[in-house]
Image (cartoon, rainbow, N blue to C red; front, side, top):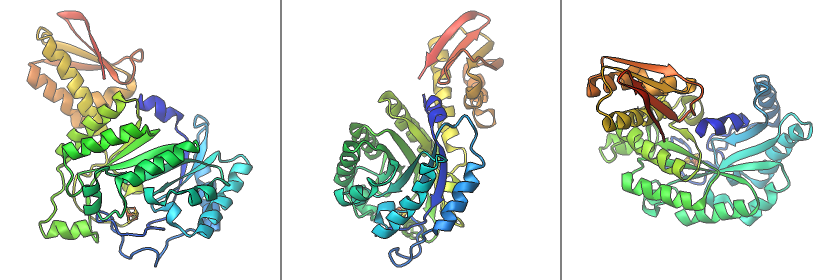
Length: 356
Ligand code: SF4
């Protein structure tokens, strides 16, 4: 399902406004100066250059293009700055080169007054930095808003027909699997159009970095985080809520020059989650049928081959060892959906299909 959605996803032209409009310094953020004092706002000329540059890379199959203001708290900017950025970008929508605008913002900035401002511009998608739906975790992260602010924000946006994305974090101080799953349940109740899941990592120059060096915070291990995000992904999938991102991307989600002190960062985090899901599916089939024999074939969609194999063939090695298989082949089969596999063997040629 995720891949079908990603094909429909617009071509994103990201414009980063690092920490612009932030009223607080959240503990996991490596903001060095409280914003409001220093706001990193791009000029209109830079907006033009960035949009022109990115549009060069737009391939014909990406039907729509969206300019995205990321990296700060968009609706926390001064009202004239919000109008300037949206107004300037609107000319690209008017001339047909861009379809719409999106931005990310804090839930406590979404109120009727701000929604009135953006209603004058072609904004279609709003992403909210939710992080957690547990007020205790939000307070420990010094977010300065509550879960109820998110509930209100989503309601206001949905009433006006915006596409709503919710950004969440796993492994914040005071968070555990139970609390994180509670967050997922509360989020599912809000029926967002999509979700992003970020692991909490420790950055230099953040309060979390200080707590980490003082032994007051221990980040989750990569294994623990992947295993839990897998459960969250499957939960959302079951609720038909697309998860469009799992894990941080160095180029987009980490501040330029940010030093990672510790935590569950991996450039292929999302791939690792999908690989574990395929591993679980294959193991499930094999456990149910012990008489598979020495030679086993697993068919998957061509785009799922590397997910089935796992990083460095991890899944293949693990399955061979666990089920005493001498020869395990992973074979592409374009007739299968991308989230499905079919297992067969010489002794069981008809095979068993399984899908998540
Ligand atoms: S996490 Fe978001 S709201 Fe908090 S300081 Fe960083 S950019 Fe600002």
